[in-house]
Image (tube, rainbow, N blue to C red; front, side, top):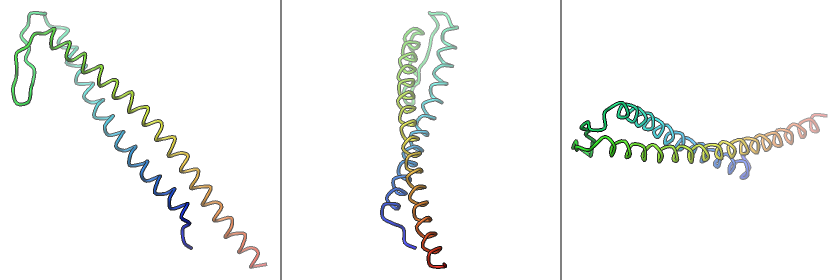
Length: 126
């Protein structure tokens, strides 16, 4: 039995959406890991005196900065990461919805094909 073009197209779209979802989940996971690191760094810096020497990593160099500047940079980074995670979470939800609709569409098409084949066999066998 050959696969109808509409079913093949739905399966192809399903695979594309699954790939997109995997990419979104991977990026989200990376941002969440970085966010945890940033939050730990903020927590440690907040415990330190404001006049303590702080070094930040820029490429292969460590550069001297002050605690307050470092804290502000980390808070800005945290805010940006949270925004990225929120955006990716919305994309994840939309992609999961699309996947569910495509699965339903594929299942309906398969049921229709089975029903058509089953009905024909029953008629031919009677």
